[in-house]
Image 1 (tube, rainbow, N blue to C red):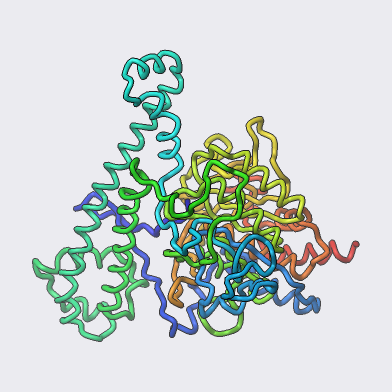
Image 2 (image 1 turned 30 degrees about the horizontal axis):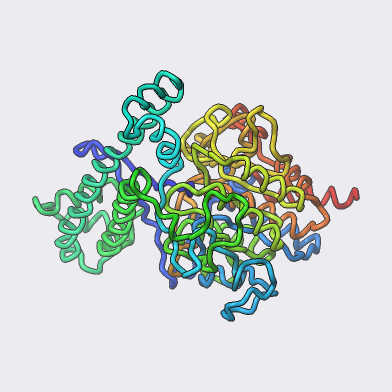
Length: 542
């Protein structure tokens, strides 16, 4: 599934739980955002913060008089707002397709694929929104027929015949039931919190009016029974998050975050762990035919484009337009949108077709901010990865957000086959780092001295969001496109490099830190400035 996490805050001791909170939502008229909101561009040399040194990299390229060549980065994700105010100028537009004529002008099997393609939609324009997790699909397709058929005698026979599978069945069944119960309990709690916000903030808004909140006017307010819960929530917000905002603004932001939480747990109940749910009929393909590719539609935004829009902005939001953020690679590359991932786990067939579509239509870098625990058709994905490598592409993949050693706990798509051999060389797997140098690895980030190549900023990351907004998210989903953006910055300005050379440049220019040395291949956080310097050296040698 889309590898996204929410920004969690302190425990509410009276409730025994945490709640989602991110007070970083900016409307379109927020033209210039504070520099501390884009910490991930920081220079480690100058600030001690392990950012990626973006501005120095751009200055170096300017001094060297390097001009960017055309380069396409494919974002395989849940959907992108292609006309976002800070993205549209840098979106890939298929030059061989005539928009809206209902024809496959370029004869690539995809009708009107102007900005890319959507592999989780139907030809009638309908789209998959939610889907189950792969573990649920495996449970239904593999274990239920063996141990939950209508023939009880056969079930018992299979228990004795396949004892290991039966143990796996019991473990997975217990896990699914546990997740269902947790989601239901969390939904009740977050719904209750939302009700407290809706009720408790009304008197607060009336009391404070349109005055920005200060310590002085806060001290004058005496909480009532009606507002006590709301004030407890307010008390958990760091001062720098609320200072200077009105109570109405804080209410709106909290409400949006809690609505996100309610939606998230609703999704777990209705889609992810729902054994009865099956949305694939919407796509209308022959799902068992793994070689089938001509399905889907051209709606690259889909019903929920938050994750993909955020990822795309980190790679290539327009630079210098005084709107929102400046993408790492900015105006030097174009973003191809490939809708691959629903609200749930992506399917291997769709991943493979997305990879092939991207490289067949000119993408040189593919960002894959998704992953899952099970991959029943992993060979199909591996074949597509090998195909992409032969086409000269670089794949960049998020490591995942479970704080697991993925050398042991496999996170798919993995770059290692069942014998432990690398599937391809031209892939970078990315872990997430924090802005705090003393606590460099993000607590949620997966790791692995064999399986995670580099780390990149992945916490408190500001980027583009749907409806022409900007928002902070966290996860290895954010770290991956930052690496893809640095790779694109390098490759667009040094186009004679190969995919493997770009990968080597990225890996050989990290800022090493002992905290990361035993949990990743390079032991460091990427640095765009050092990367372009190294690329320049390679060019001069050749």
